[in-house]
Length: 408
Image (cartoon, rainbow, N blue to C red; front, side, top):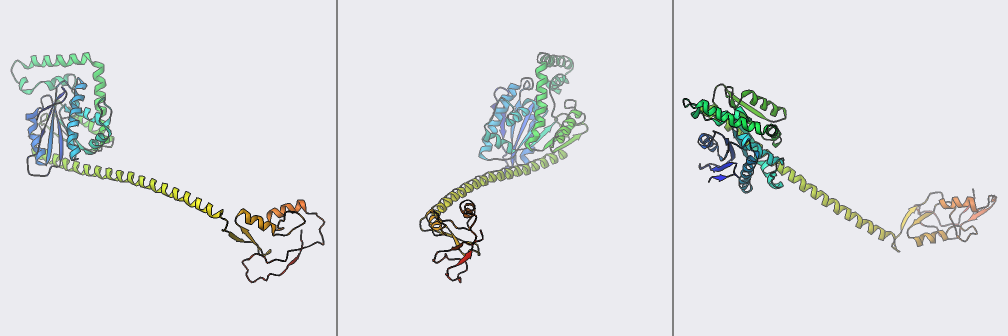
């Protein structure tokens, strides 16, 4: 079914009717004289490899009016997403002649989010994952100026005696007039066009470029320079050039080598797609693991708070005590527990005539003894009360009264 893409061109599907598993989708971008009859041989080639084809035919003036190219590109992406939402698969963008400037680069801009037309985040991630290769047959080229006039002229027209000069002059006049009217605008568009193609390296898809050294419409030095730039940016590029095959006629004149190169490239694109899916799965797994770790940390923090509160309840309980042994010299133990037990311990220690008794070997006692106890205490004897001492680590010591010379 033929679908109109917002005035910038048309597109339609060619489904694989062979009894083989569908591997992916090739989106063909045609422009100018590259129309559907000329693309049929390529559609058959992709179909024999198990790939469906979405053919996009852009209008001739799209490179001069990018708004038309944007409208067509947005319609093509929505059509493509309808298929990918149901069944994600590898997608290869195949641009013929000036199709890269008539529509392809606008597709890339929409995906990268650098265009006035936008996709939602989920659709953008889906299409970026599925794009697994870019093919350029007789391109990429910038179709403006005198080169645009050459594209506009079909070879059959130029072969008519007496008409070639007139038609050529009219075509050159139209394109030159457009250049003169929009000189600054076209210059910025050309720069934007090449920059978009270079930035598409970030999609992680390999490039296959098929060209000829004698192609006047797609100058070989321009294509080689593009391939070198992409490779310098980290892209995987394979360039195949023939000596004398015509514009968009490489498959017709070199079918064996062309078929082998395309078949190998489509297989490589399948591998790239599987690698992308694996990375997406790992990323999703890491995000899920991160959520689980955060949940586990929250549980541990909650358990720690509950445990701390339980310990506080135990420490302040009236019937719970903690015992720590004192030094062997004093042979007494220091009881640690509630505030009430601490007060009882202080009352049961040596009395020095003060209302509050303090142990002479305690830290606080040693500090206060220097302030409260007279210095001239030579000859004084200090007796402990006749009571059973606290249980110590040495359980064999007898509960006898002890007398010890003060060393203060």
